[in-house]
Length: 408
Image 1 (cartoon, helix red, strand yellow):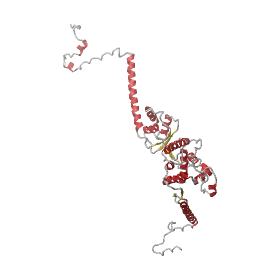
Image 2: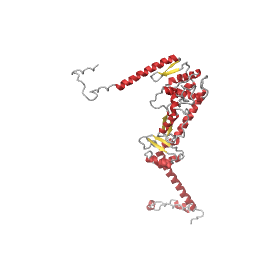
Image 3: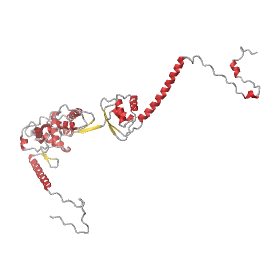
Image 4: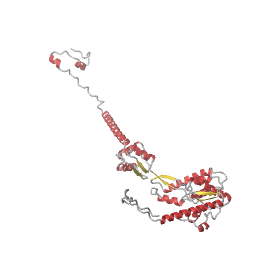
Protein backbone atom coordinates (compact mmCIF):
# COMPACT_ATOMS: atom_id res chain seq x y z
CA UNK A 1 0.00 0.00 0.00
CA UNK A 2 1.33 3.45 -0.98
CA UNK A 3 1.53 6.14 1.63
CA UNK A 4 0.37 9.33 -0.11
CA UNK A 5 1.50 11.44 2.77
CA UNK A 6 5.12 10.68 1.90
CA UNK A 7 4.64 10.44 -1.86
CA UNK A 8 4.86 13.08 -4.44
CA UNK A 9 1.85 14.86 -5.87
CA UNK A 10 -0.48 12.28 -7.50
CA UNK A 11 -0.41 14.39 -10.65
CA UNK A 12 3.30 13.83 -10.82
CA UNK A 13 2.67 10.07 -10.62
CA UNK A 14 0.37 10.30 -13.59
CA UNK A 15 3.08 12.01 -15.59
CA UNK A 16 5.71 9.32 -14.82
CA UNK A 17 6.28 6.88 -17.65
CA UNK A 18 5.24 3.34 -16.77
CA UNK A 19 6.80 0.21 -18.15
CA UNK A 20 4.51 -0.99 -20.96
CA UNK A 21 3.04 -4.41 -20.49
CA UNK A 22 2.73 -5.16 -24.17
CA UNK A 23 3.69 -3.86 -27.61
CA UNK A 24 0.17 -2.47 -28.07
CA UNK A 25 0.48 -0.47 -24.91
CA UNK A 26 3.85 0.79 -26.10
CA UNK A 27 2.26 2.24 -29.21
CA UNK A 28 -0.44 4.13 -27.26
CA UNK A 29 0.26 7.89 -26.84
CA UNK A 30 1.19 9.14 -23.47
CA UNK A 31 -1.74 10.60 -21.61
CA UNK A 32 -1.66 14.43 -21.64
CA UNK A 33 -2.63 16.07 -18.41
CA UNK A 34 -5.66 18.45 -18.53
CA UNK A 35 -5.05 22.22 -18.45
CA UNK A 36 -4.89 23.82 -15.09
CA UNK A 37 -8.08 25.27 -13.75
CA UNK A 38 -8.54 29.04 -14.29
CA UNK A 39 -8.04 31.00 -11.16
CA UNK A 40 -10.91 32.77 -9.55
CA UNK A 41 -9.00 36.11 -9.79
CA UNK A 42 -8.82 35.85 -13.60
CA UNK A 43 -12.59 35.48 -13.77
CA UNK A 44 -13.21 38.63 -11.72
CA UNK A 45 -15.47 41.16 -13.58
CA UNK A 46 -13.02 44.03 -12.98
CA UNK A 47 -10.19 42.10 -14.63
CA UNK A 48 -12.41 41.22 -17.59
CA UNK A 49 -13.44 44.87 -18.01
CA UNK A 50 -9.83 46.05 -17.77
CA UNK A 51 -8.73 43.55 -20.43
CA UNK A 52 -11.53 44.70 -22.71
CA UNK A 53 -10.57 48.35 -22.23
CA UNK A 54 -6.90 47.65 -22.97
CA UNK A 55 -7.90 45.76 -26.11
CA UNK A 56 -10.04 48.68 -27.29
CA UNK A 57 -7.21 51.13 -26.63
CA UNK A 58 -4.71 49.03 -28.57
CA UNK A 59 -7.06 48.63 -31.51
CA UNK A 60 -7.86 52.37 -31.48
CA UNK A 61 -4.18 53.32 -31.40
CA UNK A 62 -3.44 50.99 -34.30
CA UNK A 63 -6.36 52.36 -36.34
CA UNK A 64 -5.54 56.00 -35.58
CA UNK A 65 -1.90 55.38 -36.37
CA UNK A 66 -2.85 53.92 -39.71
CA UNK A 67 -5.23 56.79 -40.47
CA UNK A 68 -2.61 59.32 -39.39
CA UNK A 69 0.06 57.74 -41.55
CA UNK A 70 -2.29 57.70 -44.54
CA UNK A 71 -3.28 61.33 -43.93
CA UNK A 72 0.36 62.44 -43.61
CA UNK A 73 1.28 60.77 -46.87
CA UNK A 74 -1.69 62.42 -48.60
CA UNK A 75 -0.92 65.79 -46.97
CA UNK A 76 2.69 65.80 -48.17
CA UNK A 77 2.30 64.25 -51.60
CA UNK A 78 2.05 66.28 -54.85
CA UNK A 79 -1.43 67.62 -55.53
CA UNK A 80 -3.64 67.14 -58.58
CA UNK A 81 -3.36 70.72 -59.92
CA UNK A 82 -2.21 70.63 -63.55
CA UNK A 83 -1.64 74.37 -64.03
CA UNK A 84 -1.23 77.42 -61.82
CA UNK A 85 -4.44 78.67 -60.27
CA UNK A 86 -5.34 81.88 -58.46
CA UNK A 87 -7.41 81.23 -55.33
CA UNK A 88 -9.00 84.13 -53.43
CA UNK A 89 -9.55 83.78 -49.69
CA UNK A 90 -11.92 86.40 -48.35
CA UNK A 91 -11.55 87.95 -44.91
CA UNK A 92 -13.32 85.81 -42.31
CA UNK A 93 -13.26 82.58 -44.36
CA UNK A 94 -12.93 79.51 -42.11
CA UNK A 95 -10.83 76.38 -42.53
CA UNK A 96 -13.74 74.19 -43.62
CA UNK A 97 -14.80 76.63 -46.33
CA UNK A 98 -11.22 77.01 -47.58
CA UNK A 99 -10.80 73.23 -47.75
CA UNK A 100 -14.08 72.82 -49.63
CA UNK A 101 -13.11 75.54 -52.13
CA UNK A 102 -9.74 73.88 -52.75
CA UNK A 103 -11.29 70.47 -53.33
CA UNK A 104 -14.03 71.79 -55.61
CA UNK A 105 -11.37 73.59 -57.66
CA UNK A 106 -9.36 70.40 -58.12
CA UNK A 107 -6.45 71.84 -56.15
CA UNK A 108 -6.46 69.21 -53.38
CA UNK A 109 -7.71 65.64 -53.42
CA UNK A 110 -9.44 65.50 -50.02
CA UNK A 111 -10.76 68.37 -47.94
CA UNK A 112 -10.86 66.24 -44.77
CA UNK A 113 -7.16 65.44 -45.04
CA UNK A 114 -6.42 69.15 -45.53
CA UNK A 115 -8.49 70.08 -42.48
CA UNK A 116 -6.87 67.32 -40.41
CA UNK A 117 -3.36 68.38 -41.46
CA UNK A 118 -3.94 72.06 -40.73
CA UNK A 119 -5.45 71.18 -37.34
CA UNK A 120 -2.56 68.85 -36.54
CA UNK A 121 -0.06 71.68 -37.06
CA UNK A 122 -2.24 74.08 -35.06
CA UNK A 123 -2.86 76.56 -37.89
CA UNK A 124 -6.67 76.60 -37.94
CA UNK A 125 -6.71 80.30 -37.02
CA UNK A 126 -3.51 81.26 -38.89
CA UNK A 127 -4.67 81.00 -42.52
CA UNK A 128 -4.54 84.55 -43.86
CA UNK A 129 -6.95 86.19 -46.28
CA UNK A 130 -5.72 87.25 -49.70
CA UNK A 131 -5.30 86.04 -53.23
CA UNK A 132 -2.89 83.12 -53.66
CA UNK A 133 -1.17 81.80 -56.76
CA UNK A 134 -1.12 78.03 -56.23
CA UNK A 135 1.77 76.31 -58.08
CA UNK A 136 1.36 73.21 -60.23
CA UNK A 137 0.99 70.01 -58.15
CA UNK A 138 1.31 71.91 -54.89
CA UNK A 139 0.92 69.62 -51.89
CA UNK A 140 -1.54 70.37 -49.12
CA UNK A 141 1.38 71.22 -46.84
CA UNK A 142 2.71 73.76 -49.38
CA UNK A 143 -0.73 75.34 -49.70
CA UNK A 144 -1.02 75.55 -45.92
CA UNK A 145 2.41 77.20 -45.69
CA UNK A 146 1.42 79.73 -48.38
CA UNK A 147 -1.64 80.78 -46.44
CA UNK A 148 0.00 80.75 -43.03
CA UNK A 149 2.88 82.94 -44.23
CA UNK A 150 0.53 85.19 -46.22
CA UNK A 151 2.45 84.84 -49.48
CA UNK A 152 -0.36 86.36 -51.48
CA UNK A 153 -0.48 87.02 -55.21
CA UNK A 154 1.11 90.46 -55.60
CA UNK A 155 -0.10 93.28 -57.84
CA UNK A 156 1.56 96.64 -58.39
CA UNK A 157 0.66 100.17 -59.35
CA UNK A 158 3.28 102.56 -60.72
CA UNK A 159 2.94 106.25 -59.93
CA UNK A 160 5.17 108.32 -62.25
CA UNK A 161 7.06 111.33 -60.93
CA UNK A 162 5.44 114.71 -61.53
CA UNK A 163 1.77 113.73 -61.21
CA UNK A 164 -0.49 115.91 -59.11
CA UNK A 165 -2.28 114.42 -56.12
CA UNK A 166 -5.55 114.52 -58.06
CA UNK A 167 -3.97 112.58 -60.92
CA UNK A 168 -2.55 110.00 -58.48
CA UNK A 169 -5.96 109.50 -56.87
CA UNK A 170 -7.55 109.11 -60.31
CA UNK A 171 -5.01 106.41 -61.15
CA UNK A 172 -5.70 104.51 -57.93
CA UNK A 173 -9.46 104.77 -58.42
CA UNK A 174 -9.08 103.30 -61.91
CA UNK A 175 -7.25 100.24 -60.56
CA UNK A 176 -9.69 97.31 -60.57
CA UNK A 177 -7.88 95.22 -57.94
CA UNK A 178 -7.85 97.82 -55.17
CA UNK A 179 -11.04 98.37 -53.21
CA UNK A 180 -12.60 101.14 -51.15
CA UNK A 181 -12.68 104.90 -51.48
CA UNK A 182 -10.08 107.56 -50.81
CA UNK A 183 -11.40 109.84 -48.11
CA UNK A 184 -9.87 113.06 -49.47
CA UNK A 185 -7.37 114.32 -52.03
CA UNK A 186 -3.98 114.52 -50.29
CA UNK A 187 -2.21 117.85 -50.18
CA UNK A 188 -0.02 118.54 -53.20
CA UNK A 189 3.54 117.30 -52.83
CA UNK A 190 2.85 114.93 -49.91
CA UNK A 191 2.98 111.65 -51.86
CA UNK A 192 6.07 109.80 -53.07
CA UNK A 193 5.88 108.55 -56.67
CA UNK A 194 7.04 104.95 -56.80
CA UNK A 195 5.89 101.43 -57.67
CA UNK A 196 3.72 100.06 -54.87
CA UNK A 197 2.83 96.40 -54.45
CA UNK A 198 -0.42 95.19 -52.92
CA UNK A 199 -2.69 92.18 -52.76
CA UNK A 200 -6.28 91.72 -53.86
CA UNK A 201 -8.55 93.25 -51.28
CA UNK A 202 -6.11 95.99 -50.23
CA UNK A 203 -7.71 99.41 -50.09
CA UNK A 204 -6.87 102.47 -52.13
CA UNK A 205 -6.57 104.50 -48.94
CA UNK A 206 -3.92 102.08 -47.62
CA UNK A 207 -1.78 102.75 -50.72
CA UNK A 208 -2.19 106.50 -50.25
CA UNK A 209 -1.13 106.16 -46.61
CA UNK A 210 1.98 104.22 -47.64
CA UNK A 211 2.85 106.87 -50.24
CA UNK A 212 2.55 109.55 -47.59
CA UNK A 213 4.71 107.69 -45.07
CA UNK A 214 7.40 106.93 -47.67
CA UNK A 215 7.37 110.59 -48.76
CA UNK A 216 7.86 111.86 -45.21
CA UNK A 217 10.78 109.49 -44.59
CA UNK A 218 12.46 110.39 -47.90
CA UNK A 219 12.11 114.15 -47.40
CA UNK A 220 13.49 113.98 -43.86
CA UNK A 221 16.50 111.97 -44.99
CA UNK A 222 17.26 114.19 -48.00
CA UNK A 223 16.75 117.42 -46.07
CA UNK A 224 19.27 116.26 -43.46
CA UNK A 225 21.83 115.64 -46.22
CA UNK A 226 21.40 118.95 -48.10
CA UNK A 227 24.43 121.08 -48.95
CA UNK A 228 25.09 124.31 -47.11
CA UNK A 229 24.13 127.71 -48.49
CA UNK A 230 20.85 126.87 -50.24
CA UNK A 231 18.32 129.72 -50.47
CA UNK A 232 15.59 127.45 -49.05
CA UNK A 233 14.88 127.28 -45.35
CA UNK A 234 12.51 124.34 -44.80
CA UNK A 235 11.64 120.87 -46.10
CA UNK A 236 8.45 122.38 -47.50
CA UNK A 237 10.46 124.74 -49.71
CA UNK A 238 12.63 121.80 -50.78
CA UNK A 239 9.48 120.02 -51.99
CA UNK A 240 8.17 123.11 -53.80
CA UNK A 241 11.38 123.65 -55.73
CA UNK A 242 11.75 119.93 -56.46
CA UNK A 243 8.24 119.92 -57.96
CA UNK A 244 9.33 122.64 -60.42
CA UNK A 245 12.43 120.65 -61.35
CA UNK A 246 10.30 117.53 -61.82
CA UNK A 247 7.92 119.28 -64.20
CA UNK A 248 10.68 121.00 -66.19
CA UNK A 249 12.66 117.90 -67.18
CA UNK A 250 12.30 114.13 -67.21
CA UNK A 251 15.96 113.55 -68.09
CA UNK A 252 17.91 112.25 -65.13
CA UNK A 253 21.20 113.95 -66.05
CA UNK A 254 19.51 117.36 -66.29
CA UNK A 255 17.74 117.49 -62.95
CA UNK A 256 20.63 118.78 -60.87
CA UNK A 257 21.48 121.38 -63.53
CA UNK A 258 17.89 122.62 -63.78
CA UNK A 259 17.87 122.80 -59.98
CA UNK A 260 21.06 124.87 -60.15
CA UNK A 261 19.39 127.38 -62.49
CA UNK A 262 16.54 127.90 -60.02
CA UNK A 263 18.94 128.08 -57.06
CA UNK A 264 21.09 130.66 -58.88
CA UNK A 265 18.02 132.73 -59.76
CA UNK A 266 16.79 132.73 -56.17
CA UNK A 267 20.24 133.80 -54.97
CA UNK A 268 20.28 136.58 -57.58
CA UNK A 269 16.77 137.79 -56.72
CA UNK A 270 15.45 136.86 -60.19
CA UNK A 271 12.01 135.46 -60.88
CA UNK A 272 11.99 131.75 -61.64
CA UNK A 273 9.87 132.09 -64.81
CA UNK A 274 8.87 128.42 -64.95
CA UNK A 275 6.16 127.54 -67.48
CA UNK A 276 4.72 124.65 -65.39
CA UNK A 277 3.84 127.12 -62.64
CA UNK A 278 1.73 129.05 -65.16
CA UNK A 279 -0.15 125.86 -66.05
CA UNK A 280 -0.74 124.96 -62.39
CA UNK A 281 -2.00 128.45 -61.65
CA UNK A 282 -4.55 128.09 -64.46
CA UNK A 283 -5.71 124.48 -64.07
CA UNK A 284 -4.60 123.34 -60.62
CA UNK A 285 -4.33 119.64 -59.85
CA UNK A 286 -6.34 118.64 -62.91
CA UNK A 287 -3.20 119.04 -65.03
CA UNK A 288 -2.61 120.50 -68.46
CA UNK A 289 -5.42 119.90 -70.97
CA UNK A 290 -4.29 117.79 -73.89
CA UNK A 291 -2.63 119.85 -76.62
CA UNK A 292 -2.69 123.10 -74.64
CA UNK A 293 0.01 125.64 -75.57
CA UNK A 294 0.79 128.51 -73.22
CA UNK A 295 -0.07 131.90 -74.70
CA UNK A 296 1.48 135.28 -74.00
CA UNK A 297 -1.70 136.37 -72.27
CA UNK A 298 -1.47 133.41 -69.92
CA UNK A 299 2.15 134.23 -69.11
CA UNK A 300 1.02 137.73 -68.21
CA UNK A 301 -1.96 136.57 -66.13
CA UNK A 302 -1.39 137.04 -62.41
CA UNK A 303 -1.98 133.95 -60.29
CA UNK A 304 -0.45 132.97 -56.98
CA UNK A 305 1.60 130.29 -58.79
CA UNK A 306 2.72 132.17 -61.92
CA UNK A 307 6.46 132.63 -61.36
CA UNK A 308 6.60 135.04 -64.30
CA UNK A 309 4.54 137.41 -62.17
CA UNK A 310 5.51 136.62 -58.57
CA UNK A 311 8.86 136.72 -56.77
CA UNK A 312 10.45 133.69 -55.21
CA UNK A 313 8.79 130.33 -54.84
CA UNK A 314 5.10 129.66 -55.46
CA UNK A 315 2.98 129.09 -52.32
CA UNK A 316 3.03 125.31 -52.67
CA UNK A 317 4.21 122.39 -54.80
CA UNK A 318 2.80 122.02 -58.30
CA UNK A 319 3.20 118.22 -58.37
CA UNK A 320 4.58 115.30 -56.40
CA UNK A 321 8.34 115.13 -57.04
CA UNK A 322 10.31 111.91 -56.94
CA UNK A 323 13.43 111.16 -54.94
CA UNK A 324 15.77 112.15 -57.81
CA UNK A 325 14.26 115.64 -58.06
CA UNK A 326 14.43 116.10 -54.28
CA UNK A 327 18.08 115.00 -54.31
CA UNK A 328 18.82 117.41 -57.18
CA UNK A 329 17.54 120.41 -55.20
CA UNK A 330 19.34 119.32 -52.04
CA UNK A 331 22.60 118.92 -53.97
CA UNK A 332 22.44 120.98 -57.21
CA UNK A 333 25.17 121.25 -59.82
CA UNK A 334 27.81 123.89 -59.23
CA UNK A 335 27.22 126.13 -62.26
CA UNK A 336 26.55 129.78 -63.06
CA UNK A 337 23.64 128.97 -65.40
CA UNK A 338 20.64 131.28 -65.19
CA UNK A 339 18.65 130.15 -68.24
CA UNK A 340 17.62 127.02 -70.10
CA UNK A 341 15.44 126.32 -73.11
CA UNK A 342 14.34 123.19 -74.96
CA UNK A 343 16.81 121.94 -77.55
CA UNK A 344 14.19 120.28 -79.77
CA UNK A 345 15.29 116.74 -78.95
CA UNK A 346 13.68 116.36 -75.52
CA UNK A 347 16.51 117.96 -73.56
CA UNK A 348 17.58 121.52 -72.79
CA UNK A 349 20.47 123.87 -73.50
CA UNK A 350 21.74 126.08 -70.68
CA UNK A 351 23.19 129.58 -70.66
CA UNK A 352 24.85 131.89 -68.16
CA UNK A 353 23.95 135.16 -69.93
CA UNK A 354 20.76 136.52 -71.42
CA UNK A 355 22.43 137.10 -74.80
CA UNK A 356 23.51 133.46 -75.01
CA UNK A 357 20.04 132.43 -73.97
CA UNK A 358 18.46 134.47 -76.77
CA UNK A 359 20.65 132.70 -79.29
CA UNK A 360 19.52 129.35 -77.89
CA UNK A 361 15.90 130.48 -78.13
CA UNK A 362 16.39 131.46 -81.79
CA UNK A 363 17.86 128.04 -82.58
CA UNK A 364 14.95 126.35 -80.82
CA UNK A 365 12.44 128.40 -82.84
CA UNK A 366 14.20 127.48 -86.07
CA UNK A 367 14.01 123.81 -85.13
CA UNK A 368 10.34 124.23 -84.32
CA UNK A 369 9.72 125.78 -87.76
CA UNK A 370 11.60 122.97 -89.48
CA UNK A 371 9.66 120.33 -87.54
CA UNK A 372 6.36 122.05 -88.31
CA UNK A 373 7.18 122.26 -92.03
CA UNK A 374 8.20 118.60 -92.11
CA UNK A 375 4.95 117.59 -90.43
CA UNK A 376 2.88 119.64 -92.89
CA UNK A 377 4.76 118.16 -95.86
CA UNK A 378 4.20 114.66 -94.57
CA UNK A 379 0.51 115.39 -94.05
CA UNK A 380 0.09 116.80 -97.59
CA UNK A 381 2.18 114.19 -99.40
CA UNK A 382 0.23 111.91 -101.81
CA UNK A 383 -0.06 108.28 -100.76
CA UNK A 384 2.72 106.03 -102.16
CA UNK A 385 2.11 104.01 -105.32
CA UNK A 386 1.08 100.44 -104.50
CA UNK A 387 3.75 97.81 -105.10
CA UNK A 388 2.40 95.20 -107.57
CA UNK A 389 4.50 92.49 -106.01
CA UNK A 390 3.36 93.39 -102.52
CA UNK A 391 -0.25 93.48 -103.75
CA UNK A 392 0.00 89.99 -105.20
CA UNK A 393 0.80 90.89 -108.85
CA UNK A 394 3.56 89.35 -110.89
CA UNK A 395 6.92 91.19 -110.80
CA UNK A 396 8.52 92.23 -114.09
CA UNK A 397 10.30 89.40 -115.87
CA UNK A 398 14.06 89.49 -115.80
CA UNK A 399 14.01 88.88 -119.56
CA UNK A 400 11.34 91.45 -120.42
CA UNK A 401 11.63 95.19 -120.84
CA UNK A 402 12.60 97.06 -117.66
CA UNK A 403 9.92 99.23 -116.04
CA UNK A 404 9.88 102.87 -117.07
CA UNK A 405 11.78 105.19 -114.71
CA UNK A 406 9.78 107.39 -112.33
CA UNK A 407 9.11 110.90 -113.62
CA UNK A 408 11.31 113.65 -112.18
